[in-house]
Every structure is written in structure tokens, then in C-alpha cells.
Length: 198
Image 1 (cartoon, rainbow, N blue to C red):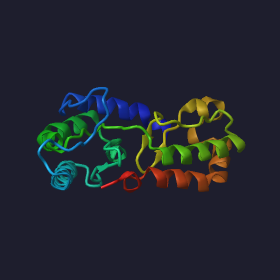
Image 2 (cartoon, one colour; image 1 turned 90 degrees about the vertical axis):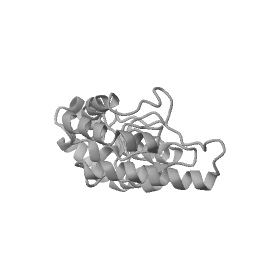
Image 3 (cartoon, rainbow, N blue to C red; image 1 turned 30 degrees about the vertical axis):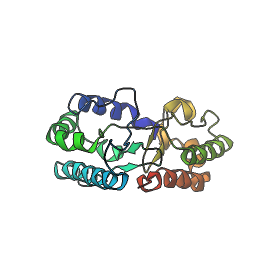
Image 4 (cartoon, helix red, strand yellow; image 1 turned 180 degrees about the vertical axis):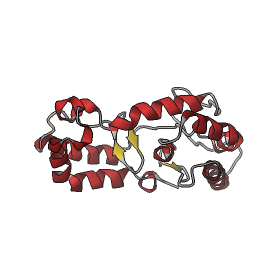
């Protein structure tokens, strides 16, 4: 949740210089190339995404999942599998897989906006948590960071005592227990499979 955001940002910055910078502020998108049939292009792009993911798996992250493409063409990647890597490991993967990542048209750090169904699930979780002892927990929006397969991030100021005891705080634990159903629904709405279109 939100507590992992700082570490992820540091590792993602390390990879930024190692992978093709085909976008900066723009979101990743896989629109068809001129003169290429949509079906053939989609198949070749899926194969390229699989090859890039396989390279990542081969170079130290065996659990890394193939990226998926949403209905509006945004690429979602398995960033959560990369969170425990050191900056050195992250950079090494970026260098080793640069050509495959470029061919696939995505970067390991691609983070499109949260889709509507995930935002709706997150709002239900937030309402439940506020009603059960976490009054500072905010409703997510499409720009709130999330990890595919794990839901929205959580910041320390949304916990009791400004996060001094982390998620182990008894008040936070009671809220999490009371809202388990809503949290599971949010996680399910954030899985790579739930975000996929192709």
C-alpha cells in the first residue's frame, strides 16, 4: 500500500536512465502502426511484451508477470514484483532487457491512471476504513498510486498517530479486519488480469 511508494520511486528512478524513454509525461499506449493490421499488430505486440517479461524473469525476478493492455491502450506492468530489488539489481535488469523492453513498447515503471472500477472499489474501502477508526483515510482518484494485485497505496498520515506504529497499530488492525471484504474487492479490481483487454 502507500508505505512502499518511496522505495519504489527510488528504484524506478534508477531504471529510468537504463530503459528507452519513449515517453516522459505521456502515458504508455499501444496504438496500431500505419500499414499494420490490428490483429497482426496486437499479436506481435503481445509476443514482444511476453519476450520482455521473460527477460525480466530470466534476470532475477522469476515471479514477474507479463504486462497487460487495457481497453484504452494503456500498458500495466507488474511493478510489485520489482519492489524488493536493490537499485543495482533494478539497473542490471534494465540494461540486460533494454532491447526487449524497447521492442515491447513499455518500461518497467509504466503507471497509467487507475481505471474507474478500481477507483470505485477503493472508495468503498476508504469509506469503510473511515467508519471503522481511520478518519483520515482518503478516497482514491484515478491519479492515486496503486500496485497491480495489491490495490491503492497508503500514506502514514492516513493511519492513527500519523503512522507511528505503521500497519501494526491496533486501531489500524481493527479497521483492516472490519473492512477485509472491501479490501479484497479492491485488490481483485487491481490485478493485472482485471486490467487486461487483450
